[in-house]
Length: 171
Image (cartoon, rainbow, N blue to C red):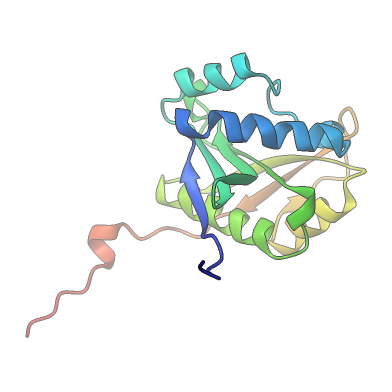
């Protein structure tokens, strides 16, 4: 037997992750997190719809081994928006370990790589830990609430294209 811990990975949402994602949604429901995160219904049909409808939007799972412990997305591009909306949820059992922060950094980098200059997110004003995390990452929120939510924006620094950032060795 190996004492090796399972890997922690961020992976594009594919049909292989549908059932583990639905199990993750059930955990969020049991934890009472539905009021804080529900970008779409947590059903098999809704996940199928997401998988069928993805064109430019990005959907990811944060996995430890074969278990989904996070779900994140950058969406809005498919509807023609230039500023994508970021959404994220982390498994209650792994919160406070830096995985949410790491996942946020990944999503920000993915948006930047895609050419986004700014990110948008909505957070329930009662979700104080999430709002604190977002503020620590540089998101600025308006004081105005809309249905119990506040909207935050993050300015992304100009990106350097992969072609321009490569250094060529003359060896």
